[in-house]
Image (cartoon, rainbow, N blue to C red; front, side, top):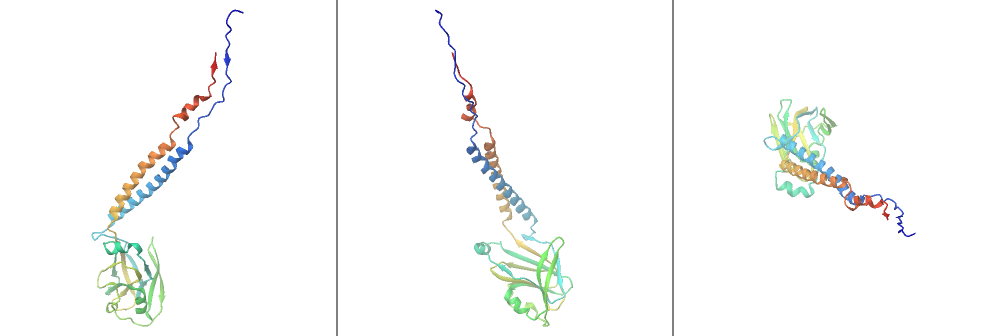
Amino acid sequence: MSSTDTTATLESPERPVAPQRPRGTRLGFLIPGIVAAVLAVGLLALGGLALWGDAQKDSAGYLSTRTERIGDNTRALATKNLDVNLGGAGRLVESSEFGKVRLQATSRTGKPLFIGIAPTRDVARYLQDVSYSTVTDISTGPFEADYTRHAGTRWPAPPARRDFWAASSQGAGRQTLTWKVADGDWSVVVMNADGSPDVEASISAGAKLPFLDEVGWVALGGGIALVILATGLIVLGTRPPSGPAARAVGAGVPRVAL
């Protein structure tokens, strides 16, 4: 046979190769992006809360509670031991307005009122054998105070005559006590100025927090930066594969040789 034979040879088709998504690389973007998003939400919430609190401060710079009524038929109202341990914040409290506490109280009976804060051991010694009440628990919505009553028959000396008070105020009308927080065990006492029974007063507490606005803006700025970072990482983590992984789709096409 003189004509040239033309032989068509078909190569065995190769098994199609599925493109491989670079999972490790994508998770390396996606997981940090989710973490950054969670942190961003926390910082934005903190910043908003701090700026809201800063807007609630009064003209003296104090953020205060609502005025509430406390009272009992004993000769004094005292808080439980307040254990203050400033730790590393001690220098900050000493060198700034941060850490100032203000208590404001007004008698509801018309009697001159005394309000003071002193070391717990001195308060316990002063009120020994005196009928007084310890404020053990306070709940809000509505406000309610629970008391533990201590029996006694002694009429205490007028509290203003004692010199152990770290801060105190007494008189008719609204009384204001300001105290620079310090380490130690402390108790707050509210009494009639003459030590008579049936103490009843309207009281509010406040704290001076001069850095609220700075904290708010820094937290908001950090939250916005993290939102931008999280968005970029999540986009990279969820983007379809490209490059060699996408070109691998054509690797399974059968080749024909003539």
